[in-house]
Image 1 (tube, rainbow, N blue to C red):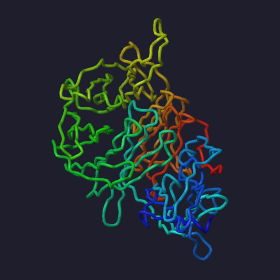
Image 2: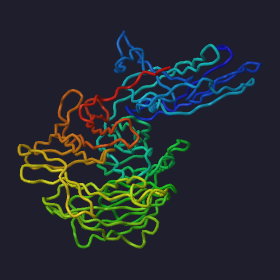
Image 3: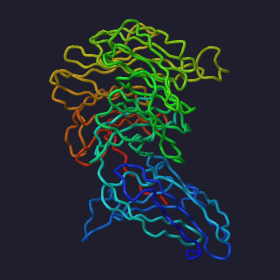
Image 4: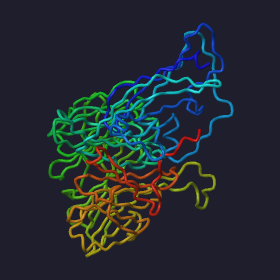
Length: 523
């Protein structure tokens, strides 16, 4: 059987950056004159198709590549690898899907090395594919791949709102090459945020650039979006997430933009809503950008409460934007909403929330409410609307406080407080709400050292890399939280690691949990 079938592996490129997607194509062919029966298909649940990457060794040493612990013979993966990395269990079926291959017939499969194998360290690698047939394996000839270190200089982490429980996370970064800067779009697992799914180069930038990745409202949306701003030139990349066509970059034709806000929202029709601000943050509007780059501006009514010092854009799926903001040194968080099906109607002012102390950072969050639970609600089939919560990071003397409020309740509640008197002026860098509806924060002291603060564990600690070195401001750390279906309410910090030439990840929550390692394949 092994002689009867031929397996061929082709890569979309022979060279990539660390953490970059590499598309591949597998072809299983019957070159003979007789049909071959009972051939397992490429269905990933058959657990029949595998890729293995081995570091190419020169003089007995690895050429810059070190396999992961326990993977001395290389890195092995399959179509279920990303699923297994998320911590879920997969078992092959008792009766794998099979078919007959006539003479000259073939089966084809396309995929992404990043999803199958994870991030490969820099160096030279040799890749082979193998496919389990009836009683034997078809093995492809070796294919070379060279992985070069990345040089990220700008990092963007999307801040999603209320969305589908399986909608993946997105991000973007700018790589500084020797001759040009490249913009990348990233897709990460929502169940375990450090688990990479895609990292696609989408365009070029001229210099120092603001970049923003659009969040995805639901699984199955086929278009991703990246915006980047150089000077006042705004560009939009439209990414075909199934990978059928290459990314397309168009200039955005609309009002001049000076600041991109976190984060845009990709819509199912391929359009994108992008919050933007002027140079002084005294005016905020939402650009409605069509796939061809044409744009309309929808101003948000700030009610004279400007400039904006801290803000949060919270999308309610594809229905509404909740924009929360606070002025410099202020204690009142204001809110306004924009309906996305009729943005031309303008924004609608919400109930302001008063805090006891100056607000350093704001995080709007939509809490899902359970079905039923009240008198006369036994037959309720539609879930109640989500409830808006406003988290604030406040400074009270020598304390940093994490406070949660609801506009429909009279008093905010202090969920955690931390002594920061030895850190001087504190700057909040990133906030995220975990799957447990609790706030996690990254902040920096006057010396530039980055710290974590958690409402779940009520602890604060310096953010350090794997070698125990402190992470600092210019590494641009941001937070990502697992969705409600993750095995645990994971929260990760991601940041630029210039020494290793990559974007690194560090587990922040749950406190005391070990960072999940790459699993060995159970088959």
